[in-house]
Image (cartoon, rainbow, N blue to C red; front, side, top):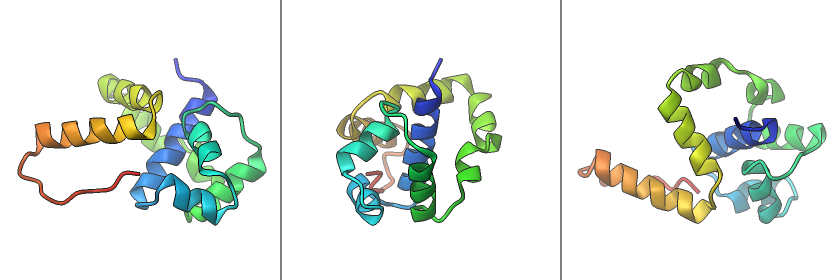
Length: 118
């Protein structure tokens, strides 16, 4: 079972990627090292609420959005999909991008627009 830090980190990463921001861009916008943000996203660091507030603000959302379980509960109902998210979360950004490219090619080989999930 994932830790609380891993769950919040996964949400931060998902929202960051949805905004098409790299770790470097998000980290720079809040005055944080990109390596530290990566550790947060992987659930390796417990962070202060003030840091979570800065991240949420930079992503144009509220802290409540990060803690809200509505979307997460929907995702968790699909156990294999949730397990995939947690598995990806345990790996580096580079490995996650590789997995994304493989999955995209496998499921949609004719899709020619590259989404940069970094």
